[in-house]
Image 1 (cartoon, helix red, strand yellow):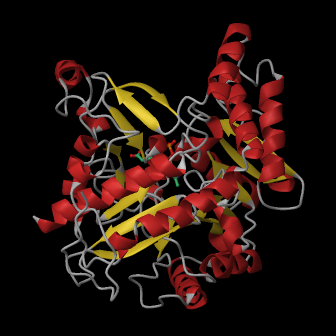
Image 2: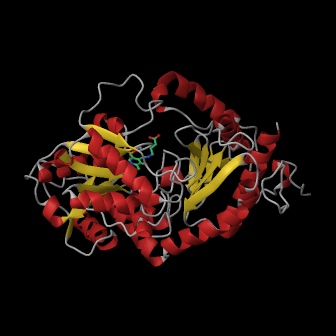
Image 3: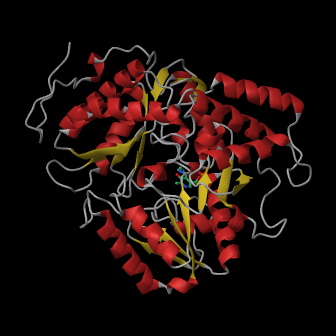
Length: 464
Ligand code: PLZ
């Protein structure tokens, strides 16, 4: 049985909506115990005793296995994965080609430290990065382990090349949890509270936020304002780099208005400033292009990547103009484990899947289907906006009929999602955005089941 939505809507047409979770048939999902289940509860006891609470825990679930677009917990409950381990499992969870490549590599060569004894996999990943990242000029790469490390190194390289130190970051940015990248991140809680002193020489200016800023769709005007603020805060001749996520991730899945990034990049280049694009979350096919900046015609000088690159194994990269990358002295960059052979094998297998399955096109399709499926939510008075590029989709919740952020509702939806068989994430400076990052290999049927369920969860929670 389906029930028609009863919430006040801002749209004039009424879309038939399933508003009860139990009315959505479980096909890909399979919830067989109370959530959390008995084995989960037993594990939770040890977790509480032995794991640092600083890590945080979004869901009362312990994963046992994962395949494609589903994750199965230790109690045998199966969830549709709309998080992909924060945009990592873009080629699918435990993709067989990635697992096989990892197993083969693990049996052959686990580690040498690339700087000590190089191996082919690292070089091949750098070649693929040069091919797929934007820009028709010679490019070189440096491989690392995490996103934060990539951002740290991009800043180091920009400083070395330019001989300057100031770094411009965006309001709502997230760049990582190390001292420098935490300092570059906006949100105090949970990322910065109590963790100072922070790194110096970082200046923050507004990012385009079409829903909330005064410039709306006029990205060029938003860029002029940002540039004006930069020049007030620091002399342009002291700036090494400007760094921005082309679509902000943790900050709220914010897609800047057309003209904003272009304006920033143009100003950077006119002032001899290196432009760094942080594509750690938005990169590798997620938005319907290999890299999100391409939607805006952005060709950065340096680009940071991680997450989907490794298909589930830890690896990240800084890729950039050869001239800039060549400015660093030997031994100034890297690390013991950076570009580990097994991670490189995983990255090569992942990139191969992205190429063969044309995952940018798949991401674009997911975006279109998701927009249709989320239309009932978009029309509801508790949602200000459903936005995104390709398969990077945010739903921003507000108090009915206002723009006042509704983080409480998002918390309730998040708490309910596991019982409904969904793995989802929130984001946003006010914690009021549900973000959807499904594996790009998710089937139309799985996506339909997941988003119909999500709408039902949101409607049930909003009606309370
Ligand atoms: N830059 C744009 O999205 C990681 C982390 C969320 P690491 N984002 C998800 C969390 O709770 O820690 C991220 C990102 C962008 C940098 C990073 C940092 O990447 O691999 O987590 O270090």
